[in-house]
Amino acid sequence: FDAFLDESGKPRASSVTIIIPAESVGEYRGRIDFVEQGSHAIIFCNGVEAGPDIFVARSQMGSVNVGDEVLFDAFLDESGKPRASSVTIIIPAESVGEYRGRIDFVEQGSHAIIFCNGVEAGPDIFVARSQMGSVNVGDEVLFDAFLDE
Image 1 (cartoon, rainbow, N blue to C red):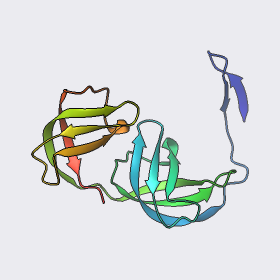
Image 2 (cartoon, rainbow, N blue to C red):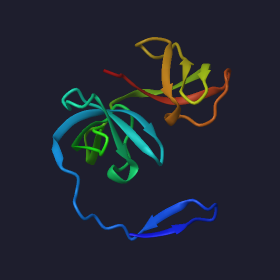
Image 3 (cartoon, one colour):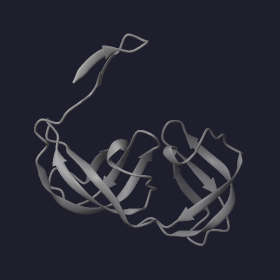
Image 4 (cartoon, rainbow, N blue to C red):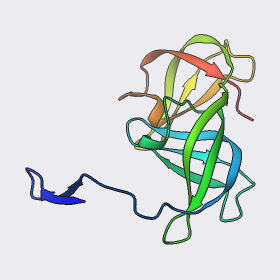
C-alpha cells in the first residue's frame, strides 16, 4: 500500500492490496441491531462463538436498516473479535406504518424515546441515534415504525 499524510497530518493509506485474506469462520444469519450511517453497523447473531455482537464496516454492506435480517461471512480480527463481510439482506425489517409523535427523551450520543399513542405495541418508541438527526425534547417527528424481536 501507499502511505501519505492528509491535510490534518494524519496518516492515510491508498492502493491497498490484500495479501492474505482473513480466514472465514463461517456463514451466519443475524439481525441488524445498530447502524452508524456512513461508518458501520452491528449485527446481532447468537451463532458466532466469539460473541453475539458482530461489527461490520460500511464497505462490507449495502444500505441496511435496524431490524433487517442478513446473511454474512464471519471472521475474527487480530484481537479475536468477530467481524462481518459480504453482508446480504435476506428479509428487510417490516414496517408497521408511518407515525407522528413527539420526542419525549434524548440520551445524547445514544438514543431517544418518541411518545406516540398510535403505535399498537406501546406509546414509547425507542430510536437509536444512528436512525435520527439532531433532535430535542418536544420536537414533533414523523417516523417509520417496525417491531423488534
